[in-house]
Image 1 (cartoon, chains in turn yellow, red):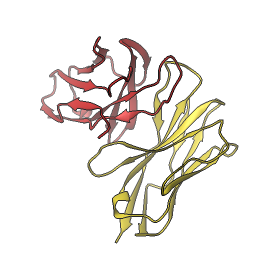
Image 2 (cartoon, rainbow over the protein chains, first blue to last red; image 1 turned 90 degrees about the vertical axis):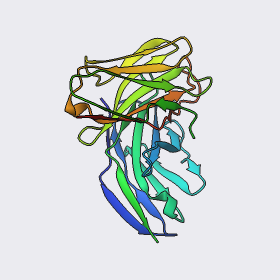
Image 3 (tube, chains in turn orange, blue; image 1 turned 135 degrees about the vertical axis):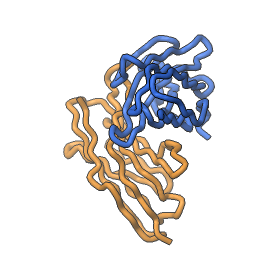
Length: 117
Length: 116
C-alpha cells in the first residue's frame, strides 16, 4: 500500500516570500502520479499542480512549482511571491497509474499554511 | 467552481438514521469518486464508479453504499449512522476513460454531515 507523509503540520510565511512544503511517499510502483491540492477555509478542494512520475521535468503552474525527486520519493511544493489568498491547508496526494479502475487518491495529513500580511 | 455539484451542503441528523448524499459530475466525466474527510481519519477514499459500474473500494463501511445512475450522477447512502460518521463527504469526478486520458480529479464543494 502506498503512504504519503507530510511532516510539517503548520507553516507560516510573510506575504511575498517563498515557501516550500514537503511531501514524501512510499510506493513500489513505477507508474504513478503526484498531486498537490489546496483546501482554503471554504473547505473546497482545489487542484494546484500535477506531476507524472515518468517525466523528469518538474511541473510548474504560475507561482507554484514542484521539486520531484523520484529516487528519494520526495515531492515538495514551492510557492513563490506568496499571497494572502494562498492561506490554506495543502494536501499532497498519490495516484497509482498502473491499474485501470484503481485510481484512488491517497492523501497526506496536510500542511496548514498561513500567509502573514 | 469545479463543475462538480453536491447536495445537500449541510445535513444534520440523529444516530441510527439513514441519509443520501448526491453528486453530479462535470459534464462528460464518467468516473466518480467519494472521499470522507474527518478530523481523526483525514481524507480517505471510499469508492469509485466508472460509467455506472463499481471500480474500486477503499475504507468504506458496510453500512455505506453507493451507486452511479445512467445519467452519471451518483449517490452515497449512509445508514445506521453513528457519531463517528460526522465528516465532510466529497465527491470528485475525472474525465479519465479506460485507463487513458487526463486523470485529475475535480472535487465538489462537499456535504457536511453532522450526526447528533
